Image (cartoon, rainbow, N blue to C red):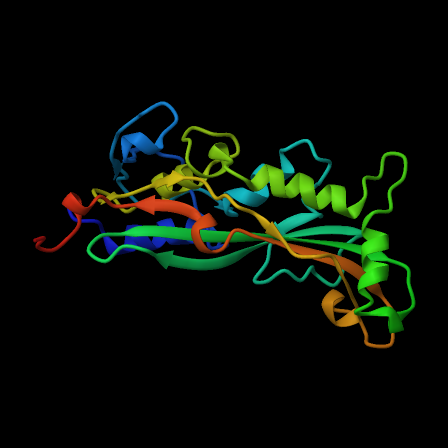
Length: 252
């Protein structure tokens, strides 16, 4: 059966930081067997009989990060259009936001869906120190009892996001994985291709000092923060692979 365009779009949205309805009804999912750790093989097919009746849920990265026992609550982790935190954020905030969607194949789909994390931590330094890389480096290494350094937090997030099968690929997860969401969002009677490989190769930028503009504060407030973005762009995005023999079109 040919992939349904609407269902493919739902798969894209699963890792592109959009909210979407979930209804939790059963479907099936297809992955190229060699990409699965347990060599499972099945088809993503929706058997829904009516409109979605569930509530709105965010994409899985934010849900899984809150549940990761790192100490981040709902007020500290959420979906954002970019890496900037909301104006009323606390001392620590993690923004989950979309990256690029790329395809490396010509006659079939071999796609990578990138998603990014940006960690922001408020600091007390003079406003004229924005861009001071030496000070940013010093502050990023500062820690205290029960308060990990900014660098430690970045490395923790980078390790958590690398090859995390539960967030993206494995089905039947609590919180729901990306493939769980694709299953529940798929239109009735359609077949689509789920994610077969999680995101990897998280690249963290050097911590930098940012001012009121980044925090959504008044320019004269003097508010300052340190931030770092963790990206999985390029070949590091979550992989969605449609085998060439099942793609639409003739092959030579």
